[in-house]
Image (cartoon, rainbow, N blue to C red; front, side, top):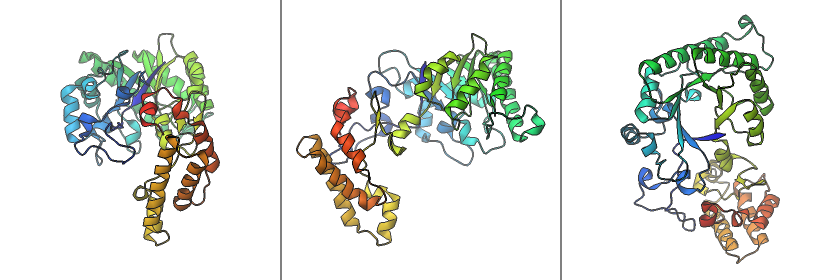
Amino acid sequence: MRFYFPDSQDQIDPSFDFLTEDGSPFRIRQRDDLYAHEILDPTPYTGMLVSKAIVDGIAGGAGRYSAQQRQRLYREGIRTFLRLDRAGGPRMDTLGDCGAFTYVRDDVPPFSVDEVIDFYEGCGFDAGLSVDHVILGYEEHAPLSDELLPPEWPKRQKLTLDLAVEFLARHQERACSFEPVGVAQGWSPHSYAQAVKRLQEIGYTRIALGGLVPLKTHEILSLLSAVSEHRLPSTELHLLGVTRCENVGAFRDFGVTSFDSTSPFRQAFKDERDNYYALDRTWLALRVPQVEGNQTLMRRIQAGEIDQGVARRHEKHALSTLNVFDAGTVDVEDAVKALQSYEQIYDGKRDRSAQYREVLSAAPWKHCGCQVCAQAGI
């Protein structure tokens, strides 16, 4: 099972000092910052996915890449730009897509088929997805007749399939070097199955299922079961934007050979409970938000409800206490007290002391073998 990590310019500053919370003043992000595959061994993914919308942006909005980064990407190619061949170990794949969720509110995709092929071929991707348009809706038992559906649903599916036909034809005419991947969009198990059937008739042997991000696990499994009735043994499936690690075995049984997602990465700093992943469980992160970086806290400071100097002192005390705790100078209860005191200032409605006590007592970072935990500690 191949796992692609979508690039959103998320990198690590190796010069960052966790004690002083400062980085090098001479840091240049593209030159000095490191990707996860340059830090972790073994690499936590088998390839990277890059969206055209992230690189080039769409009308009315800029992408995540600066003008200089875009120029360098097109000049050097995707492998050199992402420094994929410096990591050593097995070769990592590259997969390109359009970034359909970026333009989901538009009537039609903002890119032509040839523009997308130019992006894939010009950057040297190993594989690239056909131009698609996400369907905003899903009903497991939707009517089979298009007349009983919101007209936008079958319209978007037809557009996606028509673009897949054009994409494969232009890929062949231009003798492109990347592997073409057809995209199936649907609103029910039956509609996805019909889309996969049509893409196989067109000539695709690798098909990506899009629009799955909002779906629950049982809905994805039901959808894959319907698709399996039409999937040819040689057809490989890719799940766009989906990670359900506990169901990888079931996915494989239905012909899924790859998937991509940033969910585990985003959970690390956005989830309320599951932030730090060990092999056997997840842990709550120790929360010490920067005073100036917490909008809720800053609004209360500006309203005169909290003294900014007091908040800063609690923040610094929490950080310093955690550092000396990690060095073995203070005990768990001292660390919990420092965290709780600051928490009462920035989020008085919560009390995470029990979870903090649990993770501090276990100190899972001390038992993890990865370079990040070994070097950064707490």
